[in-house]
Amino acid sequence: MRRALPLLVLLTALGVGTALAGSDSYLGSFTFPADAAYAGSASCVECHEDAAAFYAGSPHAVDLGLAVPGTAVSGCEACHGPGSLHVTGGGDGFILGAADLGALDEDGKVAMCTQCHATTGDHWTGGPHQGSGVGCADCHADQAHFGGTALPAREFRNPAEFCLQCHTDQVADFRLPSRHRALEGQVVCGDCHDAHGGFAELDWNGQNSVCLRCHAELAGPFVFEHDGTTGEDCTSCHRPHGSSHDKLLVQDGNTLCLQCHFEAGFSGDGGWTLGGTAHDGILANEARCYDCHIDVHGSNVSPTFRNQ
Image (cartoon, rainbow, N blue to C red; front, side, top):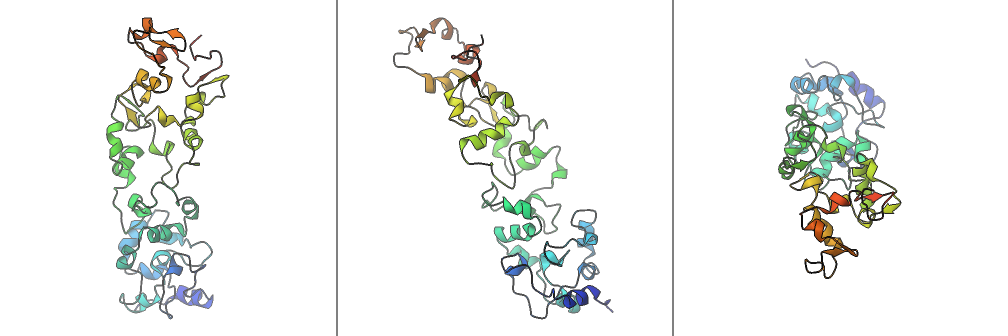
């Protein structure tokens, strides 16, 4: 005989029943049978020992009894809904099973997780993974027993390799001569990217602030500002993941600089003159602009950004 359901009796007495905090909540979006009530996770694990073992020792362990904030609904039923009919029906009664959860769209799956992980949910909207078809369990496959498309982080040597199993376009970048050393574990994707939310701001300064967390010496202010660094984002000149050019540049040094600093008449016949100064003795020897104009982001001593 199946054991008594003290939690069911208690929750029903407390008036928990099928109600949650608002119809816009995850469980509030479903219609439950009128006589369904919450039975408690202890009733679930009598039959679903495999699920209990999966979560054992994790933040989702059944024994922790963690409840959805603002409700008394905890454990298995926080995702699967009220289980009393499923229990009394010997496994045939109503429950939100694999088919129901599998039919959820991306937003529904995210809502299931963010009913508890509310802080993450607050900035998921507009983040890099929203609308991409990726839900929480696709990355956190070791935290949700309905699985995901990605191998869990523990299967990889460092966090960057975990991200790169999906972001394959960046694998080649991290193997270029000039690169951020993510594959070596010296930096991780999370140093620059928030997997749940986007950059703090969408304008150029919001993106630059990410780079300047590490490259603080380039932030200024400088006595002599380089216009290119005060009105553009860092990626105008630099490839953030890797480049075949020195210093992560998007092009070789002189070609990049001359996109902005080209002047009419600049040629061998004119002495390679830029800014009123002949560069023929320099550029003819294949020097790069930043061999002389070394402080390209800004200088406190030289209006031409030379090392003086």
